[in-house]
Length: 287
Image 1 (tube, one colour):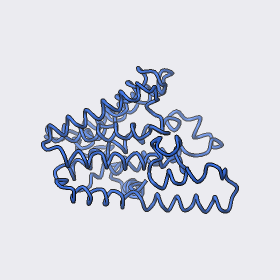
Image 2: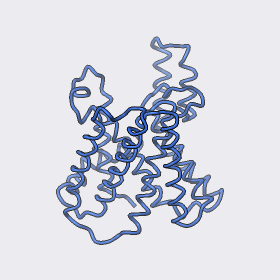
Image 3: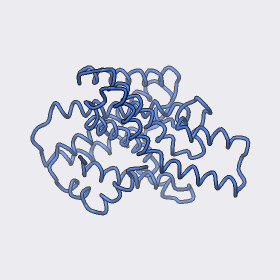
């Protein structure tokens, strides 16, 4: 089953992230508040993955064979584009001058999808944005193991809540910024993914009639989020900043998902269902 509005929103957010990664010579990536903080939309992808994976697989991973099939399917979804991109970087290394002393380890780090962890090098590999691919795959592995060993929605809910708390405590203890993407970026992914898992269980409990008016809460919530993360106290390694950044970001992203699904198609819903926006969502699926 596809959630078309969520796909459309993923497409819009993917485009914002593309703008964010434009070179600084493009003024749009530095002088626009919305673009400058569009890194936050990566957390929507994590939350959306947790929500959708729970919707599809929460009752299907019942054995080690099921877990293997689940992991292989997730790897097939993520790895082809990732591998193709690594090939381009390798070709660039062979043709263009590069820091040969660090390329090898960075390449292996990216190849093994460990470039959101400190296990090989404390960096994001040769393709920096692919840290999120690494983080998402780690989240897949983690939730697959949770599905295998824990039965019942309440218990799975509690396990996901425990993972969130553990990851946030780790960030606070080691004084790591929530929006860090280097050696502990996988913690950010696990937090967002498990917020998505929890939002699915809550959505499933409170399913009911849809309301046109709910969707207009989305721009209000996103504006609130941008106000929070653009403040001077955001994105620091202080405990208060880590707590505010992690909870505000993921709660608002998950509320956005639930509100879209609980809303009848109004102005926003119709826009997200527009064929070109849907196409954006489709081509961003592997990113």
